[in-house]
Image 1 (tube, rainbow, N blue to C red):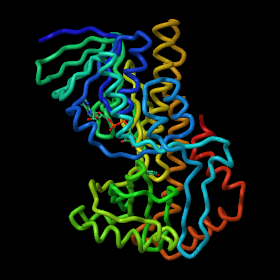
Image 2 (image 1 turned 120 degrees about the vertical axis):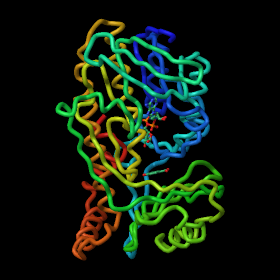
Image 3 (image 1 turned 90 degrees about the horizontal axis):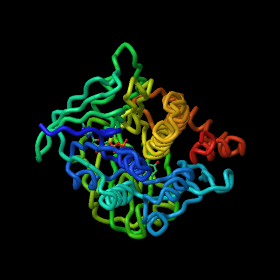
Length: 393
Ligand code: APR
Ligand code: PHB
């Protein structure tokens, strides 16, 4: 078995793992990345695509994302449309002076992989049978299988960026970790269509369920509808999808929508999950490995970016300045932001979705919340700041 020694091993080459690897490498920290899937599978994933102002600034400054300003589309905020009531803007520009950016996670991942080719990142793909030991010792070890042969790695730190079903979280002894969870009783069915998108990202509340209109490019639209969990994707041919979406959308929006055949369709259950702590011994968790939020609010990718931003700073302080204060504070610092974003995602999800079997009073209370939001600029400001992630950076 081939033996390697390195400073940092990153498990998982999604956005969290790749951004961290590139930041470390550019600063001269030696690292190795392990990815269970083949590159084409990782690059084919369609996920959310809205970046907070601080994520945009960070990605721009890092130089990792070459096409951000060419392919990204600045957004002043997003619209909420409510059945039989006026719409409102979550006006990020007005209340924070900053802008969001629509930039598909797929573009971001392509940029990161391209950059890793340039830097010659040591990325092992299609790894399997991963065994990690000695996480509470000063030299953890990893053993795994790859199509090119088996490997044994010794390192200083293991970073778990292995997503929501990852293995790394299980290395924290059960008695030492707490996992906070909520499973929502519905999912989002999303489609991608090669049609011109509507002007505004629009979150739609309708008594039959939530819907959302977003975009990926000048001729690439993404739409979602809230769906029951007992119906699979096969129950949603394009005609049914469009009929449902257009029925839930307000008239002015429905008139703007250009329908067309879906080029991708996916069904995602909605879940919230937070793991505490995000560090155990020489293991650090980042991104979906440590937390999941429902997509209402588009916080998943932004949290992954803010985690690795904190972690890269902390690891560089360790290797370059010999100080561990930031590493020791990582879990606490990251979790503060994670909880704020989880709270926003929960508030928006609760406001905009119909919960199956809910008592009639809930719909009235939701309307009450919305009407208060329409009338109260203080609430609008708080929502805009939380949506932009400004209050918590
Ligand atoms: N060994 C190696 N790689 C693994 C393992 C394993 N045992 N288990 C999982 N992985 C890989 C997955 O194949 C995936 O490519 O870890 C990667 C995790 O990537 P993501 O799921 O994209 O998670 P993350 O990088 O944290 O990015 C968060 O993705 O899920 C969205 O909404 C979320 O946008 C957010 C972003
Ligand atoms: C998306 O573009 O897919 C998207 C945008 C905003 C959200 C969720 C998803 O809140």
